[in-house]
Image (cartoon, rainbow, N blue to C red; front, side, top):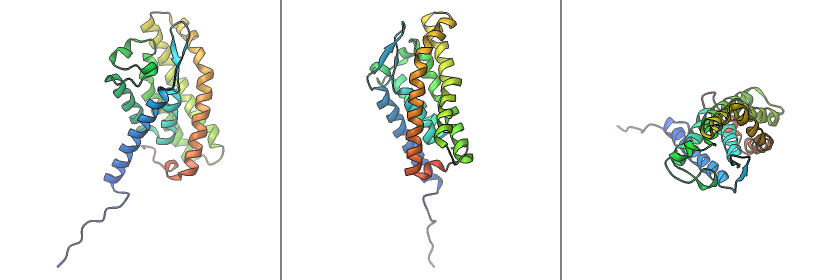
Amino acid sequence: MTTSSPRIDAHTPARIGARDLALVSVFAALIAVLTLVPAVPVGALGVPITLQTMGVALTALILGSLRGGSAVGLYLLVGLAGVPIFAKFSGGLGSLAAPSAGYLLAFPLAALVTGALATLVLRRVTRRRFVWLFLSAMCGSILVIHPLGILGMSLNAQIPLGQAFILDMAYWPGDVVKNLLAAAIAVSVFKAFPSFARRRFNA
């Protein structure tokens, strides 16, 4: 009498978990690389313009809500642990006392929002996906990153919210451009690798 071993294919939970873990790690590293591109300090507080937000948007658009949020959260945790992967080669818990702390803490939540909207777009929309993915990324910026960034500047720099709001306006043009780039790259990825566009709402 012979017994056959259970069949294991690419759709088993173990394989899916390993693939997801690899994607989370790769995209966390991608955000770190984009962040370390030379930053441009802006405004009186010197909060820099980097490609960090583009990395967050791109990660969320491609990976979805949970995996995208996990990748951004991993990036944030590694940086807070002391690895210098934040803007201007900084890292550590001291980053939470900087004027840019609100932006940093907003990134994982922004990825959850952007990823969820992107998944909805991919499941419901077949035409003009670029526009809708761009709007998904902008929602993450408008609803999460900028409000928490303004709050962080106000608290850590001890300035009125109104002044922080005015300082934050300097980052809007760059965010629009970066979200456009993220949407364009995401559309290209979905065309080259259609499996990324076929995901569950809880992905």
